[in-house]
Length: 230
Image (cartoon, rainbow, N blue to C red):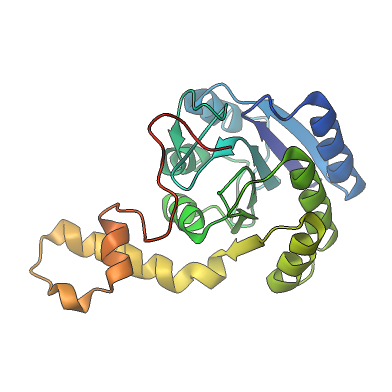
């Protein structure tokens, strides 16, 4: 079965020339490239579940958008803000994704561990989430993708080093195996909350209590009411 590379074009700031570059990089590395122009979550779910993909066929899903650690949008001015949690909910339950699907976030501030944890908590069919925790241009995204695909068989730390050196900003690969312990702890805190037990606060780590309550961790970039970041 041919490996599929799906590009979710959420912002038109990814120009046709940039998309052509992404296509060339994917095909050069042995992937079948599919472009999807995003028109909302329900339409995306219908597309992914509509029978166009065989089970587990999508190997890499590239998200091209404007974003911050809480949400993404089609323009830097905002538009319709979509939270990462909602996005993850609509990815799951379709044939195309599998436990080996990698999410490449070609958008600003989306490479933080907070975003990776959010996506993985809501969708178990995600193997890894990667991106930068700062601003990212379309040209940097294309170069980062090329270096990532070329180094796919190497360790995550080696991929991070190679991509970071090529684009000049820090690039992170968050794998499910790396985050398993934290994911289990967060799920446990959420489960205990549903039981309404009198659990001493001192028994729950600060970071997990903060996460479970939906409060951004210290130092993270909060979602802006007036619009997503670039």
